[in-house]
Length: 240
Image (cartoon, rainbow, N blue to C red; front, side):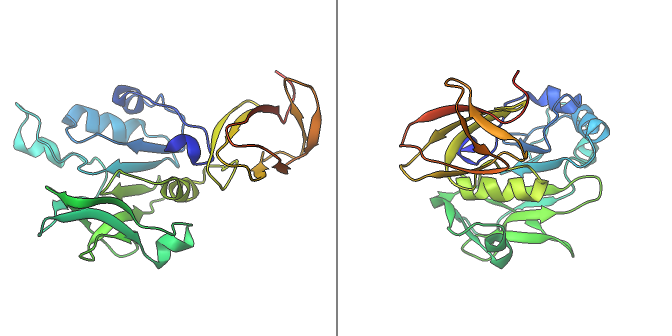
């Protein structure tokens, strides 16, 4: 799903994040369910200012064999994660706050999930989606040093990914489903339908096709006629 969100992405090891080697403003922890106390401490110590971390499903909920019981108290994300009182589907439905960020449709599993996790919210938390029983499924806790996000069901849609990008202040090159790769003034896109693709390069500079050399327009906003499956490699800054 991340490639269709409208922003480029990468995949990293947990030890890279713990060492502070991940430069992304939005960092998604899909399986940080069993995190040793030493790694928890590194994640907190080496976290770059302004980074938004998303914690999926059961973050830090599995005890590490051999560690003292108090080791789990080392802060990982600040949420009090707890199993839902009643088993049920992990379907998440956007709230008004979620819809304001562009999430229009429910997502997740319609079958019963055991265990299903939620969090105890605090004043100031933004609940972007709830489960069928009304408990929080997607929560944003905004903090000066960096936002924390709990996502109880990781079966996300591209709408959810774009909403998380907006929370983190990540630049979206397109607001519709399309594969995007971008780095150092070079943008690769692949269309998912036959409609013109609206792109936002973020730079007031000519946009050229890097294979043909044709100037297609001037950024930051450009509408590019594409057919489904068509891929274009564009330059919108000094040529590499």
